[in-house]
Amino acid sequence: MKRGLLVLITFLLTIASVSALEVTYDNVQSESLPGDKISYLLHLKNNEDSSLELKFRSPDLNWLLDQEGMKLTIAPGQTKDYSISFKPLSGNKILAGNYIVRIIVSTQLTNVEKLLTAQVLGYREVLDVNFATDTVIDPRRGTIIKLYVKNKNLVNLNNLDLELSSEHFKFTKTLSLGRSEDTILEFPVKLDPDTLRGNYETNVKISLGNNLMIDKLLSYSVQEYQELKQLTLPETRFLLTGETVTFENTGNTPVTQTLTRVFGWFSYKFASFNPEPSSVEKTDEGYVVKWDLNVPAQSNKSVNYAVNYRLPIVILLIIIIALLVWYVVRQRNAVVVVKRVFAMHTETGSVKVMKVLINVRNRGGLTVNNLRIVDRVPSAIKSPTQHGMLRPSHVKAVPDGTILVWDLPSVKPGEEKIISYRIEGKINAMGKLVLPATVAKYLLLGRAVTARSSTVSLTEKK
Image 1: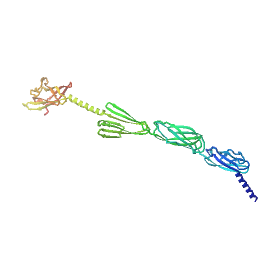
Image 2: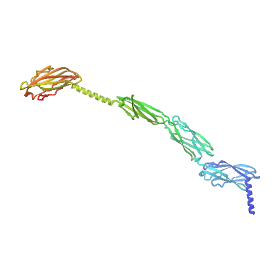
Image 3: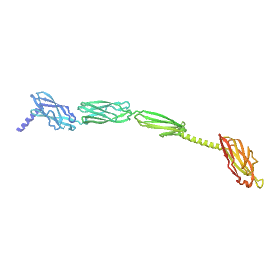
Image 4: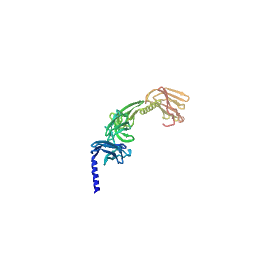
């Protein structure tokens, strides 16, 4: 009975004490980075008619109260605000996460415990970064890159180190952000005009001391532009014509270009191309030759063609020279002399009569003037007394026979002259004889020329 009464009295006193002290709080800094403090503002109200002496302590295993053991006196009916703060017992090694922090406010009679909420943030959870607008860069003009950085939490971030880098640019900057603050950073970018068009990435890094908070890739585009230049170099040499056409793409995107040339039938047959044409079309105008060229950015491509008349000219010259040689040779031997003997009859039993026929022909292309024909009859044969239409100009006896000379004023191209005479002699003597060659002498193009017939054996049967 006494025991139950004591418990009841203690319970009533506790209720009275609790109601005598009211404790509420506001979060001042309930979010923090590892190693940073958290802080709260306590609202303490004394509902008693007498002063209350308050002490503060925390039995929490993760957090250490900075005001541990501090005393505070509150007058009757007074309300007082009191700031408290905690630091993690494990320093910056405390794990990110949500925590309940215990604080006990003690009076003369009882204790009031409050559970405070806290959140430890991971370094990678605090910031967000992106381009503020679509980032498209014209390499000829440049642009201003706008980088949007936001603090997503209720923590102050001072002396942040930012680095923005890519293969085209690099920037560094120091900045600070308040609680839930955001900002736009501007970076002027000027690229090499030769930068190829396409999509690229830039790396954004933001650090707080030795702690990396952002390591993110952002995309930007380099705008394309076309700039194609054409350079034509004609080539003219002896019996050779052509040109070299070069297309230079100083832009940052590939360009497709078509080059067209028209050739006549004759020039096309003697033309060479490098590279080979993409297409060749035969039209009424001639041969239409086309090259379809794909010129990469910051590169060039060339087309070369040449019409070489040297080979046909050489062949033509060879033919002309051959004709000239043939003509000269023909002119040099323009007169052809053919000598033949025909048996006629025997006047007596021991005498043989034969007819000598000399054919003189001009096979050249020029008239032969002052042509002299010289023939000789051996001494074993009687000097000729009968002649054909052309009689000799001179007949002269010499020790070894008779010399006959015919002077022909002119023999036109293709013309033939027939000279004939009769010879007779003893059968047994003539059978062993050979008539010497007939000689033709003349001047042609200022040069003395001699033509001969073959010798003729009188034993041959004609």
